[in-house]
Amino acid sequence: MRNGKPDFRLFGRVRPANPGDLPRLAATLPPDASTRDGDTLDIDYAGLHLDLEDFLQEARRLLGQEGEGHLDAFDDEARVLTRYELSAAGHAAKTHRYDDILEHTKGEGNW
Image 1 (cartoon, rainbow, N blue to C red):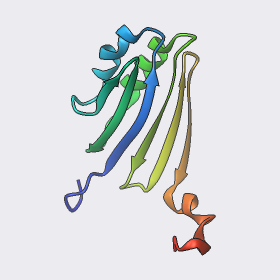
Image 2: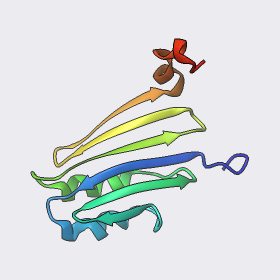
Image 3: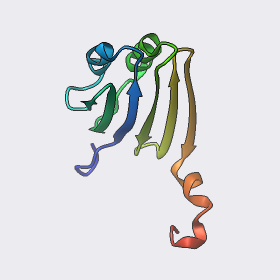
């Protein structure tokens, strides 16, 4: 953490094919990073940088054909946002720099 602020934030929702798999998926994240909402895992984390590989592998394994999800990872130190679209076939990740995200709204008070 820098200046008492978290360097890394996660937000997302994942719905595996079998809701009974939610605890196994949650176990790949810090204990306070997720909550169960019915058959969905809500993710809300702020703190030190996390290696997401175990989470991404477990999500792929547990989603099945009916599962779905996404995860947004904000790396404040590197100033990038990565959006992970999760599916049983794997995940697609797209990364944007914070400045690029705000560029199109420059004239609307974001600069």
